[in-house]
Image (cartoon, rainbow, N blue to C red; front, side, top):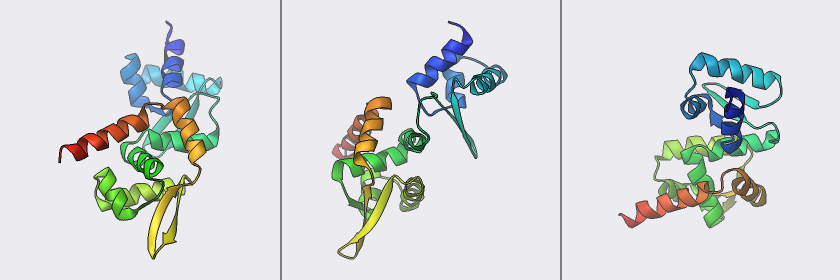
Amino acid sequence: MDRVTQIISVIEKNPGIKFREIMRETGMKNGVLGYYADKLERDGAVKIDRSPGQTRFYPPGIADDDISLIKNLRQETPRQILASLLHHKTLSFSELVLKTQKSPATVSLYLAQIARDNLIESKLVDFKKRYHVKDVEKLQKIIDKYHPGLIERSADHLADTFSSL
């Protein structure tokens, strides 16, 4: 398999994959992968999302508004938050801290990121802020299409953690 085909194959199987992960998967060195990544982007064979400290790669057919959702599903804490909200429909901040087993500061940081990406929203219920996924159907569609095992693994990990307590 030539390098271009190898890179495209890795990206199609792992939308939102980071540059270093592609290097690991393909065994290519930084400069070689950088050369091919630039060429593939110019040719329209891949989409590259460059944000501070992170470069992620996507197949060209992925809609721009799906990119932020996929990016969040590839990160452990946002994925845990989204999985918890999918499972429980609505949760308070303290419940999310318990479900993810992360510090309040970490949960707050990722809640802000997920809200900025327009994936969740909050409302006051009985004087308590509660969070829920904005578009459950869209989230489920993206999970089914690109990351079918992510939510189950996340839920299994949470179940394993709680059963060990």
